[in-house]
Length: 200
Image (cartoon, rainbow, N blue to C red):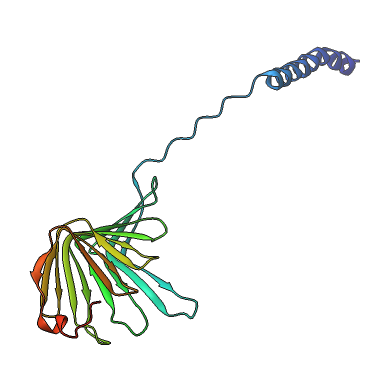
């Protein structure tokens, strides 16, 4: 006889618990959704690093077109650019001398289509295939990798074989081997470049 009495006394507690559960569920179902936190803008902070960085681009035959190396690389999340320490860019053209561009520091964009070189920047084209050695020095060179073009808006000193020139700016096309000098151009052109020498 005691068990039914105990069960009867528990029924109100169970009913209250069920009612409380249903009330909580209804409350949660009718509340407006919480506003999503706005996406935080990316900051110009490093998100990864690399030492002895190297990236190589190959053509469809597997031949190296260019190789970019650096002592260290720091990548930034906001603009996908990277800072380089002691960068070196080597560009290869079939049957033409290799061109190497170096500097104290540099930057490269996310798809490695533009490389900027700063501080003691130098372009060196080794002698070969009928071309004498060529060296250009400036405080800044910008390399357009896909076009194989190097340019600067800073004063530049150019040495091509025995010829020496200075200018206020420069554009060099590594495919056609054409060099354009801008602004205040001065220098001495060797007789070998005037009489029968290549103009490229």
